[in-house]
Each structure stands twice: as structure tokens, then as C-alpha cells.
Length: 255
Ligand SMILES: Nc1ncnc2c1ncn2[C@@H]1O[C@H](COP(=O)(O)OP(=O)(O)OP(=O)(O)O)[C@@H](O)[C@H]1O
Ligand SMILES: Cc1ncc(COP(=O)(O)O)c(N)n1
Image (cartoon, rainbow, N blue to C red):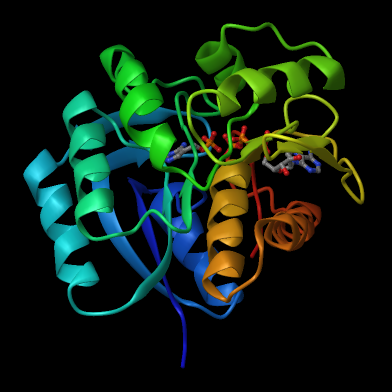
């Protein structure tokens, strides 16, 4: 039977990141994609021009409608917008037993520089959502904010992963797209280094969303985390290699 994955994230009108990237990834990797939208953004490859947050209880209602109807094998979270939405998502994850394969992408700021999570929500993500996660997938700036540690090299990525693991996530993947595209996975005991097949020059929109959605898709199909990350990295590298120059800002990756 086809496996079901869910994304809890924001809508991106230009179709490169957020819910749109996640559903394309789920489709490409052969799982049925479902969604709970947290916010609707008016954005393009150059800027986020506006963001409209949905009421937290309506985010919860979307999760409930899906979870009571189909078996959700894996979930990823992306843009969560406000502290109250984060609290509602954490509550629903527990209520519907969605934490076994929960991938938390702690999205803070867009590539174009817009805040996608209110400042007062950062502590709620740290203390209420991250402890439920099978894996969290911060990029370097997010790992710096969440761990309080400056990151300059792979040793620093390992140190940040170690500190973030203490928040209660079962695994931590620090992504190196903002450096040399080497990613570091820490499971509490061992560090694994994922080398990119190639580091493509340029700035890309939606790479992090795509990677976390691909990890969720591979987990939904029954893979373990180490191979799910490996396959997800290879999927996102392929999308980056096939990028398109559609807009005025960051490149659009191609699924
Ligand atoms: N230029 C690149 N070439 C190859 N791989 C890349 C490149 N940029 C990012 N990646 C890979 O893409 C994945 C996403 O990492 P990245 O650090 O870009 O996340 P992010 O900053 O959250 O993404 P987003 O642009 O969606 O915010 C990682 O596996 C990273 O190594
Ligand atoms: C709705 C939404 N979710 C996530 C991102 C992050 O992606 P990026 O860092 O590539 O801008 C985004 N821009 N918009």
C-alpha cells in the first residue's frame, strides 16, 4: 500500500520552498503527500513580501482531519510562524502519535532574509517541539541560534550537533549548504559525515525544505534514518544540479 507523509509548513507562492517543495518531493519519491498549512506567504525568489498566519486551532484541525483518516507514516515540519502554532503542532503530534518519524526543520529565516518564525517562538521550538523529533535539520545559521555556538568548520558543526542533541531530539543533522555542503549527523554516540557529490555554485531556494521532506518520505517508506539522509541528500543534490534561473533572486531547484 502507498505510504503517507505529512508536511506541516507554510505556503510559498513562488513554488520553490515550503508546502509546494514538500509535496513535489513526496510525489517524486513515491509517497502520498498530505499537508497542514501554518501560514500563507506572498513571496518570490527575491523576497518574502508578506505572511498571513493561520489560526493555530485551524492548523490543528488540518492535522486532525488527516490523522484520523489515513495512517501517517512520517511527518515533517517547516515554517511554523508563531509560538501558539508551535504549541498546537507539538500538542497534535503527541495526541495523534505522530512522533515516531518526526522530522523537524527548524526554519527561522528565509534565504532572502525574512523572519519565518516569531522571536518568542524560538524557545517553544527548543523546549516543546525538538524533544519530540526523530531528527532535527538546522542549517548553519539555525544551528548557531539554537545552540549558541558560532560555526566556522566541521568540528564546530559537530559541537553544535552535540549541544542540540541535549535538547532531546533523537538525532541532529546540521546542514552545510551555507558552507561546503557537507552535512553532519549525530545520533548521541556517533557522527556521520555526508559529503555532497558536488557543491553547485549559487544561491538556491527551497533546498532545506526539500531535504527534510525527502528524509520524511524515505522514513515513510520504511528506511532507517542513516539511509534516509543519504538518499535525501542525493535527491536534493540532483534537484540543485538541475536548477532553473526563473526569477530575479535565488535559483529554483528542479524536482
Ligand atoms: N550549492 C549546493 N550544492 C550542493 N548541495 C547543497 C548546496 N546548497 C545546499 N546544499 C545541500 O542542500 C541541503 C540543504 O542545506 P541548506 O544548508 O541549504 O539548508 P537550508 O539553508 O535550510 O535551505 P533553504 O535554502 O531551504 O533555507 C543540504 O544537504 C546541503 O548540503
Ligand atoms: C513558506 C516557506 N517555508 C520555508 C522557506 C525557507 O526556504 P528558503 O530558505 O529557501 O527561502 C521559505 N522561504 N518559505
